Length: 328
Image (tube, rainbow, N blue to C red; front, side, top):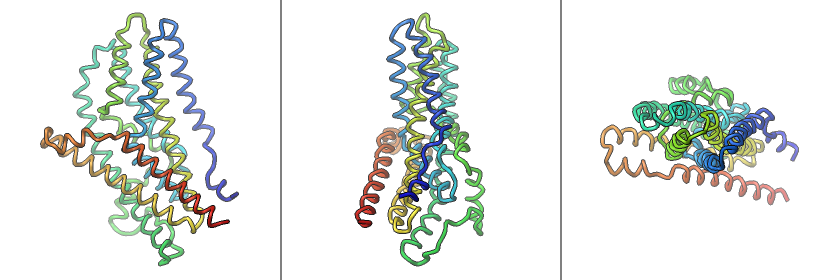
């Protein structure tokens, strides 16, 4: 029991303070706006819920879980992976909302070109990164399988500097992410597309609020702040839960089955999301009205992400229960 507690530390105080700071700042601006009416209160609550929903988008889940798997496999802390990724994503949302608010909503319908360019960059980077992470963690999965099957009981996680051209390529592509904070630029690039339903809805809310007579632009910025607060809360929780699960699975050789299962699921999610993004990218530029493009555009991203997160937690719960039963 003591070993489990060492392997699953409490969330860092800096992480809690950062997430709380976003909430406080957003609520303070919301309170100022409420002096001129209660409409902004409802908009703020909706923005917060949109942020929480966006945190469960499948690309968020895949990126956070796979980087958490990588860092825990290297013996590094992954506490800030979810928060840093979400904060980078939120920065794009905040900047675009600031532009819309500063123009009193006049530019809300003129960002299509920027969103299209950002969508290309964001999709290519996202699909490439997830493909690399799936490949990297597959090497780790193979080592876990060797230990689980008894072929190499002493097999350890292969270093990123492994020999061979593929190993060196993967090392160059992911070696720079050695702390959770380095997920910030990746989250920023992921957010460049600004084309999901939640982000478009937030842009519309901000534009409408900017046109509301008597509201200061600074007060309206409560909406993207609360959106960021909701998203960082659940993305941070996802990262912390997965860090704890991976460490729990690696703390005891008798838990290798669980470790193997969740690592395999993490890799599968990354690979599937990357394949969907590459397919959608090609379909949008070759046959935008094709059935394939339509199906991909209509995939319930948040629902799929929530299902994956729940699956991880259920696997963990079953493994922990069996572990307790075998110990008694």
